[in-house]
Figure 1 (cartoon, helix red, strand yellow):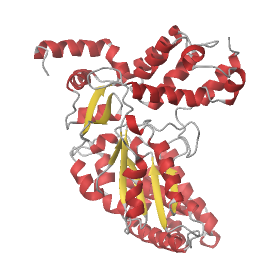
Figure 2 (cartoon, rainbow, N blue to C red; figure 1 turned 135 degrees about the vertical axis):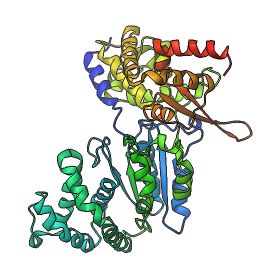
Figure 3 (spheres, one colour; figure 1 turned 30 degrees about the horizontal axis):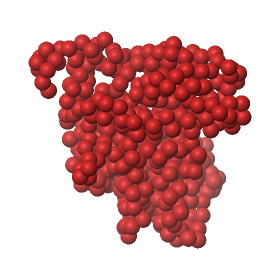
Figure 4 (tube, rainbow, N blue to C red; figure 1 turned 180 degrees about the horizontal axis):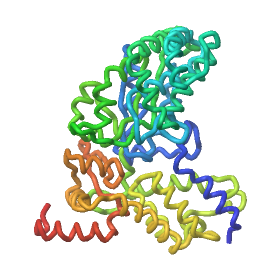
Length: 455
């Protein structure tokens, strides 16, 4: 029997919300079971080879591992002569409220983080822009800084204050946007002057500047009265501004957006976007995909068995016998996650909450599955059960708002694989945790009756 502090150690080692830095020994290469998705090739090669500045979009389900992959890309680009400014625009320490985001918020976040990351550059253009707004900012109660007190460090703090206030103080949000919106063109001009000066002063061996704005895929879609969404306004209407920063750019984008009727517009504006699919733990015919399951087991092994305290007190431990009561329990968790890494980690943490000593037993795993399954049950709206049943049966999705909403909420998951001829296949399925919910089973029965067993 393991001591309880081992459980506490494992619980804190499994952090579902912290991406892995490049070089982290817990990283598992899952390209082979993600449709050969390779960010170093899919995004990195375009940046390294292009003589012009590039702007690329990166999509995938939230929690699928995009941030971890982007940090791998950051490290690889730095080895190849790039200076990379990476920041998480949305999140616990981010600049943007995912429930209420506009283009202005992204521009201010980029300005703040470029200022912080490129301290070798001349900030006068941005300070001049800020000086032109100081009187209005003071009138709105957004600052107490005078023109005489505006230095580079103070300017950085003021942009950080604007960005932080946008996220944290909803009552001030409209004031800031109304202040900045009429002057976004001049802010972009000042930012590009700053960027171009920075590119002249990059450290030895660095020849390109790359900016990565992560977590924009978390921006919640809001449908407007005219039928368009805030995603349209940000990524399509404001595409010229998003693309106009004079450096190589990567923005993450909601997966629902790349499956909208704006997909061709996005391709025309940004080029081909890249998608990070789920780890394929089942094949399209429902059979187990052992390589995918092995990858999910490896994810847990790296986090649990390689923990120093576990190695010290349980040096010969295995997942199948010492961490979990048996191999079937481990497999059940991997399958229940649908190949979604964060979901797997959340399930294990939840199971630990119902465990006093190792190994984790069947009852604890069942409680964890039931708890998270209930979250999905409450997420799905009444008119969406029939759609989920159809996706599970046909393994296809349609260009419709309901399907996009289900992709965004991870109730529908995307998988990819290549056949022997090198042809890529995409297929979709309802999240495995949904399939045991009574409403889903009822919807499946009704679909079977309506189609006589056909699609």
